[in-house]
Length: 186
Ligand SMILES: Cc1cc2nc3c(=O)[nH]c(=O)nc-3n(C[C@H](O)[C@H](O)[C@H](O)COP(=O)(O)O)c2cc1C
Image 1: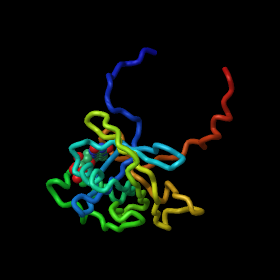
Image 2: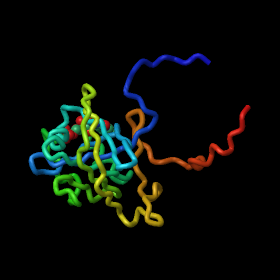
Image 3: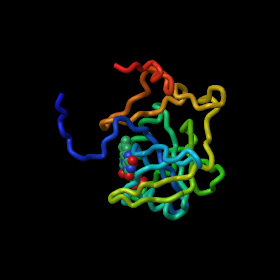
Image 4: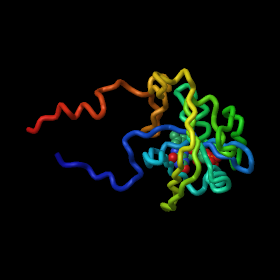
């Protein structure tokens, strides 16, 4: 089958919906981000592509710390709001209740079931966006979202982002690092 060429664009099949927390001029600010993933296992790192124009970018530059907060579907309205409005124009410090963990300058959103505290490892200037890589110093999780001490995807109920729409997590189709064992050469 011949494929249709869609041209280069920042495409990824599905993405997480997160809130990047940063103190800007001493005040918490939250920015919605979908262009984020794990960057390294040892030491544990995450990364997020942040447009240079974002108010959040100023706070990360200022403090060299930030957080990634995982909202659940219950926070979809507040989450989208943080992606529509810039802290440069409107105070977003009260959209979520903020608390601080080990880092005193990376605000964490209490309503989000999981909060990842990071120090800035490095930031790669890719053009419009800074690929902001953070070293994880701590992960805070609501006890109600854990099963046997581990974050439980069904309890967290995170927001999936794809094609300018929000989704919840669908059904499990198989088991990772195991399904492939059923593979047989044709
Ligand atoms: C679903 C969604 C995902 C977004 N993902 C990103 C992203 O990954 N990187 C980015 O720079 N902006 C992203 N944005 C846009 C910012 O969230 C938006 O410009 C926000 O107002 C910036 O806030 P700030 O200026 O207070 O930092 C996203 C917006 C939405 C609604």
